[in-house]
Image (tube, rainbow, N blue to C red; front, side, top):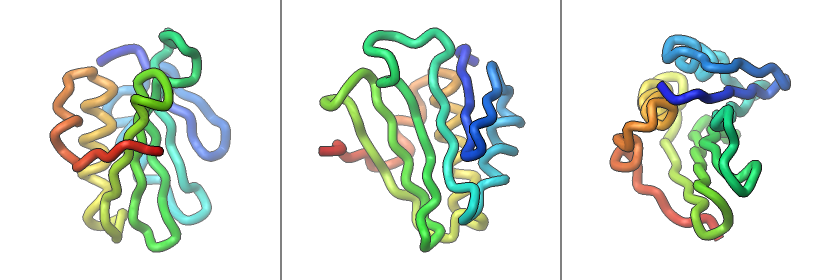
Length: 115
């Protein structure tokens, strides 16, 4: 796994979380605790523009966004509701694959550019 940092809705951070920890952090998401951000520990340029993040919508669908360095490389995909039943495992696989830097996550969802 690549060296990453996970940040939660509460501001807590975990450096180098293993795949079980990432899965558990996603499991804790709900309509109060709505997001998780994973980013490289050693931030490439430009700072703050390399990440994957998960946001739980009001209808319990899930928005996933990733950026690889700025506006032209910012994409999103939606996983339909209900997150806790269908989406959680799919989202976990995407996040874990991104953290491993194996590229498989790119083919899992239909990514569209964020404008």
